Length: 289
Length: 296
Ligand code: SF4
Ligand code: SF4
Ligand code: SF4
Ligand code: SF4
Image 1 (cartoon, protein in one colour):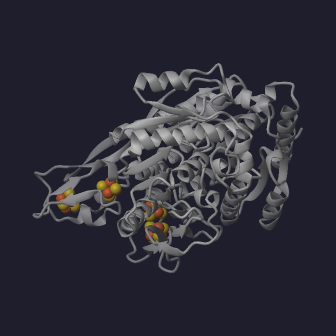
Image 2 (cartoon, rainbow over the protein chains, first blue to last red):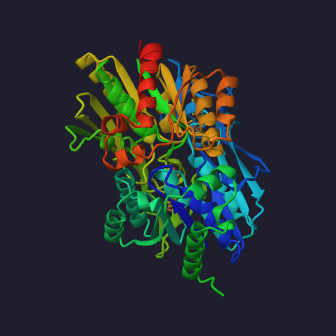
Image 3 (cartoon, rainbow over the protein chains, first blue to last red):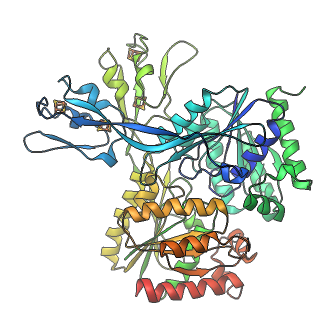
């Protein structure tokens, strides 16, 4: 089973919801939390753990064997990223940063051996045991690399290969295709929002994505006392999404954020909100014994 | 001059600070604002834009489509798609998930039945222009839900902004970058003369801004740092230590201030509605430093 925690814009508290839910749900399910916000992965910081079991993610890049290449230009023509430029006589050259590693050039090259296997390190994945009874999988894009899609795919693959009953994914901000990739395969989408005008604007986008993906969607309103929850309810209603939790602005949450200790471990009222939310999720998934 | 404001991740107050700085600098310079967060644009909202004056659709994205009539269901495309975007539906047809497809055309190249897979150009979003109620123009973009190529949208936004700068004889472009460090941010920072980084004193924000700074270094742009919610976490000194070690000048600290969320709820820059609040005072000092040291 898989569920996703997302939110249209950054900074709404998506990761806070994800890690606290994970701590609670790990009591009922063998759980893997996949941090797929590969451009800014932070779940490990919020959980106070150091990333472990690093594995490189290498991406294919063509290398040309100029002794074999016939300068037919087919590779350059087929490259959707325009990563291959050709000289006047047809000699191909690669501009590495543009290459997405898709292998279209290799597939189309008519001369065996003219395109050789090259590779570039684009990031890492990690598998970290947390102190809370679940495993954290993290994807981390290398600085200067443009494409997060391969990292999201790789991190998700690594998570899928672990032994788990429930995989929870924490996505990046936004609603581009890497967010859909992270969410793909989920049975439930939990959209974390803020009741501010900006938050409401972005909530609509993530609800649209949920609808396009045919996903059951729930809304968690963070910092609920800082705005108009009625407006969020109205928009959620339009998309058939239900508000399942309201979290007030809280100094304790800020502190837990800073100290790397999940709030559900403390005896504070906010912890109860996360526990109830976890209960709801567990009921939804049918894991309530 | 082109100034990019970045943070590595959302939620640290980048757009609020950008809106306030634009407000404070608008009378001293002829500015143009670019909201480069194409996946969650909101600078326009913060600057009171109600209606866009011009809108251009962007058709940069491509997605693959499979014709079920000629498909022989060999599954080769399914096996070869580098991003696992092809699936089998309930009727046993291979289908491309358009919400995740990167448009690389590998499936089309490996399909044994010519013409079964076609790569189609689709709309990836819109780029818009408006004049803010403060008099300066803004360019903003909105990526369509589930589409790739947000970086290309940002590149095009900046090209439009550059044209407007020439036409209207403007001096400075202020770019509010997207969250993250991927294509959108690279497109935001590429070509900028200066980067202003914004971070708050938390481990997560420090990690994000460090990653953003590596991208800045890649472009060899001078960087400055603004610390937001500076008093949020008094025990946390690593942000300042990092800036010092890297030689990044800290051009100001903005205290945590309830006036900020209030002003955001009003969709106005905090310096306009609560000019006497502690945050606004700090922002005014920062605007002066930017004027003196960066914009000249
Ligand atoms: S692997 Fe793909 S993106 Fe890279 S050069 Fe070849 S065709 Fe272009
Ligand atoms: S497709 Fe192959 S043979 Fe043709 S130019 Fe490219 S590398 Fe050379
Ligand atoms: S175009 Fe590329 S990403 Fe899209 S389905 Fe085909 S192989 Fe997959
Ligand atoms: S490769 Fe072509 S024929 Fe084979 S399943 Fe895919 S679309 Fe159908």
